[in-house]
Length: 178
Figure 1 (spheres, rainbow, N blue to C red):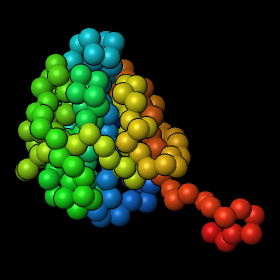
Figure 2 (cartoon, helix red, strand yellow; figure 1 turned 180 degrees about the vertical axis):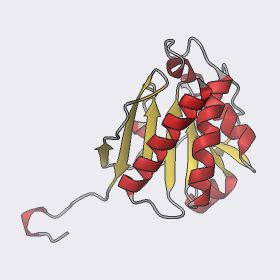
Figure 3 (cartoon, one colour; figure 1 turned 90 degrees about the vertical axis):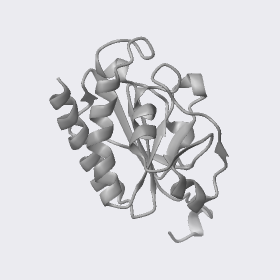
Figure 4 (cartoon, rainbow, N blue to C red; figure 1 turned 45 degrees about the horizontal axis):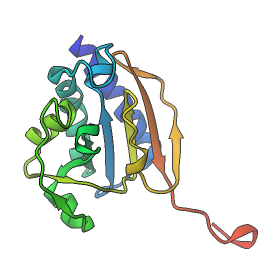
């Protein structure tokens, strides 16, 4: 099963990166319910191995492209985010003191915390694109204008995935040139 999860995660991340047009230094947020991946209700069956399968697949791809991963924690940590310290410092984000655990933060955020070189937690971020795996509600962490992106797949494991890229706001009305 974990190989199927990795294969779906690879397809999703590569298709979304192709559609999003991100560049080095951009931020990509992922909210991931390992419970939903395994066919359980969000928050009811956290599985570290499923979350790690997703993390171990997507993180190297993002890192190779110079894109920062922001791993969303679960609601027990108010959907805080785990990022590399370099990302927090580059964007001037305020670091908060918390370390995620599988049952308080979630298995995906715990995987990120263990897999990053210098992990820190943030309360707020404005990501350039993102993937919601299993209804984790990442919208609050995206820049203001989110654009849905449809992929060739709609699930990782049993979890529905919703993806988005962002774009700058159009301002100025009918006489403006974009």
